Amino acid sequence: MRAATKTVSPTPDAFSRIDTLDWAQVERDLDAQGCAVLASLLSPDECQALAALYPDDSRFRSRIVMARHGFGRGEYKYFCYPLPEPITSLRPRLYARLVGIANRWNRTMGIDIQYPRDNQAFLARCHAAGQTRPTPLLLQYVEGDYNCLHQDLYGEHVFPIQVAILLSEPGRDFEGGEFVLTEQRPRMQSRAEVVPLRRGDAVAFAVHVRPVQGTRGSYRVNMRHGVSRLRSGRRHTLGVIFHDAK
Image: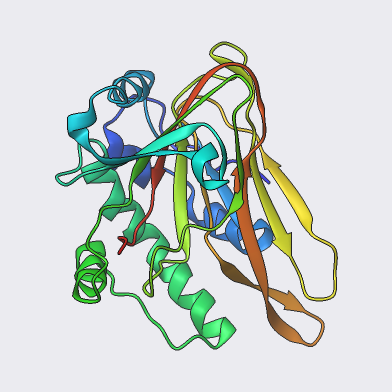
């Protein structure tokens, strides 16, 4: 899988960085692997500023200790509204780039759901169904922590692609802790994809199911994601989910 690269090299703001990605390559990677790397989506300063929010409980609506729920080891916190920058800018901009892929996937899989072009309109749909709690989250892992394979569904209304952004530098801040995606095809053993990321890189990936083209047409595959065991250090990740939770 090839990372989507920039067409310009200066350090523009988050909006401009999204626009300069090779979105045709992102779409091809999502179709082929169920995930795509968005290289250098955040600057080092933005990564540091977001990770530094973790101790400030006033920014978050809840804290989850994974071991208490059988989710793995480590912890994460869900942001409360209003979301901080650059999440406020990133969420609708990324959604606008991914919604066409999401709608095409649903048509291909025969799922009778289409998403509005605007993320705020989709969130209004979520809120009308009782899904009113914000889902962007900040995750923290230390030595020995890991995240079991899972799906972030949260309710009836689910946008089928989400984004995770690595805020720490592998090899300097931590060792291990790779992002892992698994794919279960009908009557086949599961396939794993380990996605290499650097600080500031994001991975867009399928939340639940995605279409795969076979010899007799397309069929659905089930996707799960997680994080392998952290061997040393500390790792922070920003999760950007486009549907809200009940």
